[in-house]
Length: 303
Image 1 (tube, rainbow, N blue to C red):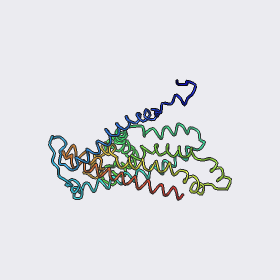
Image 2 (tube, one colour; image 1 turned 45 degrees about the vertical axis):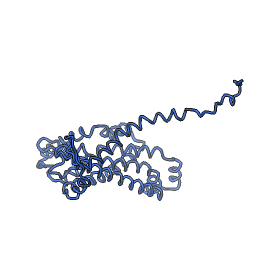
Image 3 (cartoon, rainbow, N blue to C red; image 1 turned 180 degrees about the vertical axis):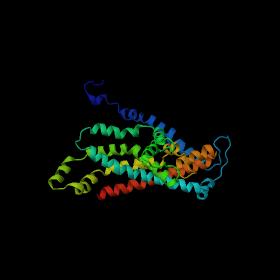
Image 4 (cartoon, rainbow, N blue to C red; image 1 turned 90 degrees about the horizontal axis):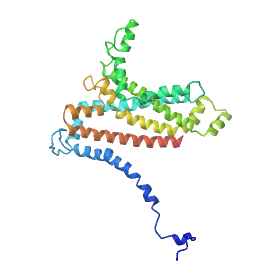
């Protein structure tokens, strides 16, 4: 007879199902990951070895032909350089401005919460809307900037006439939109610091640049790594602002790899080549973020 007062007697020898039940909660996330990430990636890799036009039901295997075409495509070389400029340039600007704003707004100043919200607000706005807003700023005839210049007696400027100037404007716009994200990350890092270390540095007479270099910056390395990696990935994938502001022009001079993929797929009806470029962009981002993470981890350890 089972003794209801003896817990050991109630043990049937079976393991509890609690762990298995909790693991079932992973299934929706795994399913979403497979459907929206793994499957499109594998399909893109498969299509990159074909000559599919994106519309017809037939496609033929062409091997590495699409990848070899990239070495002969002068336009791809241009957009690849632009992509690196967008990624590295935007990341550098966002770190400098974002960290500066975080240090400023982490101090006890009036209205800092409102200022934080205002600076972060552009990150919540769609990139298409942001690009459209700046299009009316830089427009030649009725743009706000040219209107201001004319009122000051200065001539109008065709802002998107020169490729170098156009690329620089796109980098600045992308940086200003997402600098609030970097600011929030750095603010979280500053507020999560061990204040006893800061107080000890103050007692030891560390102030200004010396304190920032030897105390604050090493403690901010986790936030710095997160901000740099997120900004770099976003910059390398830049699409919306370019499409709205310049459409990749003049010519192909301001295209990124992402916009060039869209142009190749929809306008040139060459889905196979577009898929190959997408695979190359994926590899570039994966390698860049991996090397960057390792470098930042080593830098953080040395600090």
